[in-house]
Image (cartoon, protein in one colour):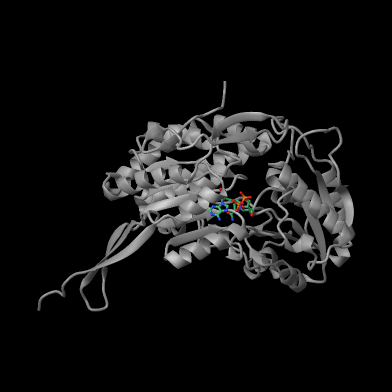
Length: 484
Ligand code: NAD
């Protein structure tokens, strides 16, 4: 069955593209073209924004009650749940996520998000009467923010679309989704499910496109809010445009998170945990905890255990269920990761497993060797810059205060973990590290709780009531003082 497509989803229909520009979807494993889809241009973005604008200004969606919108999103959730495997398969095909990760996170997590947002929306104070300071009632309403531009990256495409699309829909917004050019296939299945669920025409519009069309969407006067996930560099540019235009904006950006291994941690389960938190999605994860902090007294034991664990991981075809580390998304990403492996060596760090070159047994595909560096100083570029691949740095600390200091010595502030057999000591560390999320002996995201970044990792929060509120404007309506 071909995965090729020839239209965009605009105004509830499959609309012909404005140009004949195509995106070639290339398998990161075979390096062969697996699909061709239209590439959006400024004219396609204009058509999508016009449809979203009309649906917001004149259509039924923003005027429906929250309960009516919840019913449509419930229908979407049911359809989504019935298509998890197909969705996971599309994502593995287009961007090379190992099937084991796709079936765990690439489609189940977006579905769990839908359910979690539905639960929040059922309890949300859409309109409440408060007794004001003057004694009269004030009605406080959460109204939809308007037309939302949702711009996700390729690494967890459905995950980062759903965290924007679902709260936007529940709030009564209309949406233009601009998927990344590397991952344009999964949104087609999503569009079909939205259509089947009964989302009215123009409420969701989807145009996959590159950076230029993305910038056109961000600056478009018909857009009221931009919800972006991607690199910190792009986030700064988008934030500047939105600041100038006073557009609402939320930014989920990069990270360089630290996992702190305390001396009392049981190294067996800790290594199993680190395998996931540091190397999920082949290291192409914003929350990847690629700085591993170990005390000087326990340093060699942690380095040896990590080297043993990482060198035993199965690298190869992402479609193979046994694969733990797949290829990088694109050749440029493979080159970028290799550049950082070379840089680490130049900076004086010591490769304890991995290094430059293709993994054993592979002669094509955009693979890199999972690499662990020891003797890393937190000031080195490999410890400060987001690599976005399976490259870990083990950094020594003197005591717990020093570990917290090193964890916080980063421009980023997205995630982190602490590994310990003392839960209270773990919570103490968790409270002191300046990141938006933190895990004690785990990093299982909870979609009922807010997620986002401190510092250069972002602005705003996704998930939970805080994530839903980002798609609303708050209005206060005053009423007269009671007589007498
Ligand atoms: P990227 O910034 O290059 O692109 C992200 C998306 O933005 C793509 O759709 C791209 O086409 C678009 N884009 C790029 N520049 C733009 C501009 N100026 N205006 C409008 N749109 C623009 O990032 P990427 O390489 O696709 O993704 C990897 C990055 O995403 C990493 O830095 C990672 O940490 C981050 N990320 C963050 C989170 C989070 O929740 N904090 C989650 C996943 C990924």
